[in-house]
Structures are given as structure tokens and as C-alpha cells.
Length: 89
Image 1 (spheres, rainbow, N blue to C red):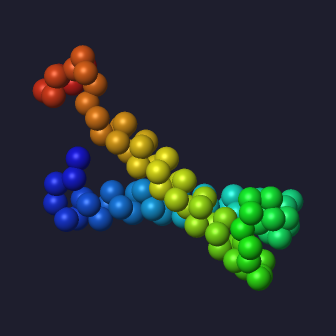
Image 2: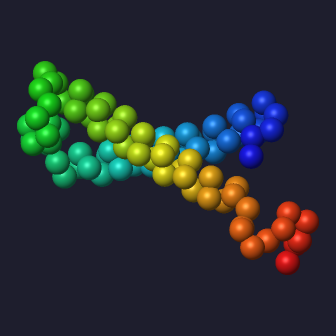
């Protein structure tokens, strides 16, 4: 799956960039409806500012997006068990 340094960079970008964008969108949607203080109180995290709540949620959503994108890339790059490498059909 990862051969040269250039393809490793492409894989890294293909996983992190879409997850970054999705994390930003979902963070905005989440906090359009939920107050960060209420969310932090529910999960038992103490923070002094809303910015801490925004940051923690964004990082969590970004991590989830990275895991999902990496799993999808892994599945796409895994050969089918019934097909041979040279068979194009």
C-alpha cells in the first residue's frame, strides 16, 4: 500500500484532510445546538472557557474522522480474497 515517500504523503493527506474538514463541519453543527458548558458538564470535564470545549470536541471528532478514513482506505487497498493480482475481471 505504501511504497515511496511521495505515496506516503498522499495517503497521509488523503486521510487527514477530509477528516479535518468533516471535524470542522460537525463541530460547527454540534455547537449550533449544544452549549459547550452543558456538554462538558455532562461528560464530567472541567474547563474554564467555552474555547476548551470547542477544542476538545474538534480534536475528538478529528480523531474519529482519521480512524474512519484510515479504515476505509485500508479496505479499499486490500485485495479481494477471490481475485488474483493479475486478473482484471
